[in-house]
Each structure stands twice: as structure tokens, then as C-alpha cells.
Amino acid sequence: MRYLPTLNVWEPSIQTAIQSGQLKLQRGQWLRCGNSAKPSRYIGMIGRGDLWLNHWQGSPEKTRLAFEQKTEAMRMREGKA
Image (cartoon, rainbow, N blue to C red; front, side, top):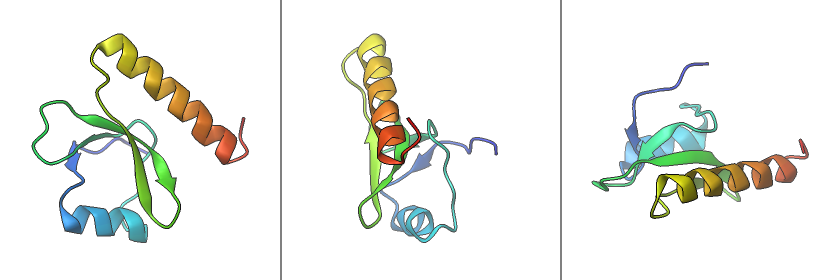
């Protein structure tokens, strides 16, 4: 599966397509929340269709570390740890 161009998850049609499964994202997909200057990365879908994203943490190092921690937490949640 290939990564898609950066999508704006504040667009209702994008949210609906992701939640319905019409649009499938892989972990790490770059996403934008509105007109935020920094893109976010997709972690997964939790609950009843809530998107879990990793947002900018103030530095590239902190952002990468947070992404790795959230990815590991998602793997554990899915039983793939």
C-alpha cells in the first residue's frame, strides 16, 4: 500500500471516507488538521471512529519519539506487541 498525498482531516468528506473504510490509511500517513503549518501523522482509529494522530511536539526529536511511543501503544492495543 502506498502513502497518499497529505490529506486535510478537517474536511468532512475525508473524515467520513476514513471512518467508513472507503479511504484506508496506513500508520505514518501524513495528515493536516485545518491550515496547521505542521502536518500530523496517522496512528490509527480508536473507539467509534475517532482518529488518533501524532501532532507536532515542539521539535523533530520530540515529535518522532511521541510517534514511536503512540505507535507502540497502538500495537499493544491491537494485540500485536
